[in-house]
Length: 80
Image (tube, rainbow, N blue to C red):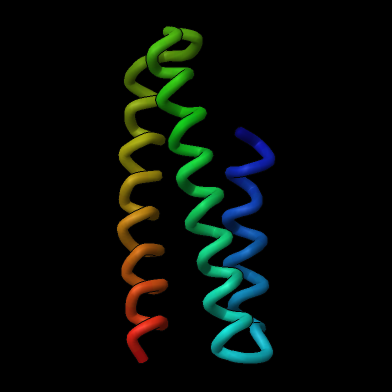
């Protein structure tokens, strides 16, 4: 989860300095894929009761908000 979660931020940073629209879209798409993986790990942690349920639920909710934002960015970029 640490790898996928931190990869989101690094790809967003790279997208900020993208050299082209195609490069920007690529970095945002990778960030979205990493978000899906992070969400998966959080769901496993939640189901396994490894950590405090309330904290994991909050992180999962934040992750889902990020997913909606990234989906919107990718979709808008593809359409423009």
